[in-house]
Image 1 (spheres, rainbow, N blue to C red):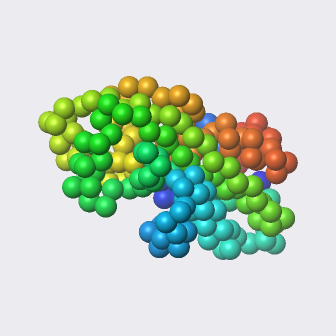
Image 2 (tube, rainbow, N blue to C red):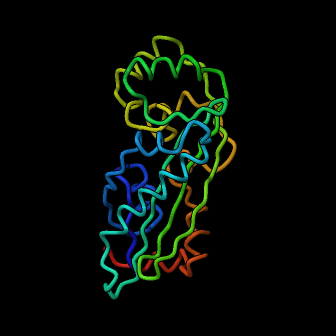
Image 3 (tube, helix red, strand yellow):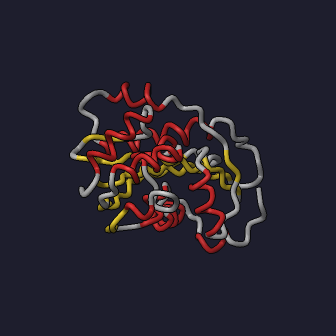
Length: 208
């Protein structure tokens, strides 16, 4: 078997690697802003996360060789922070990131991650969205400014991380922590099983 992660996210790739799952990566090239706009104003954060995950997986799957004797599975993911029904992806700029942190401090949101797994040879796929409640702490203005200066919030959905510099600013979560990082490992295991793949069998696979 061969697993291909349709993502440029080092955090998602690291989650798979540390879980013993060999994989390769390919950037989808999907224009997230345009794809989101095409969904219309009525689209929910869940709709957006799932639609983008599927678009990314399909964009990469089209480049896979269906005649490859190895069974190939493409994984697409997309995460947004749901704050009061509003989907927050990566901040547009530092000012946007600052406004978000001012609004998020001391509040609760939900990290929604859409997942799509495509069995390339069979041309079938499964979709699912995982949600994790995130309770933000109350970093002071100097701490927020220091975090913004690090550049990290500009590269991640919602403008925060659970596994890097922003971790001390997250008071608690309810749900799967790997989902907040960008890929729900328990959900991915279930989705692969739906396609006939045992998670533990992937531990024995050679690096693609």
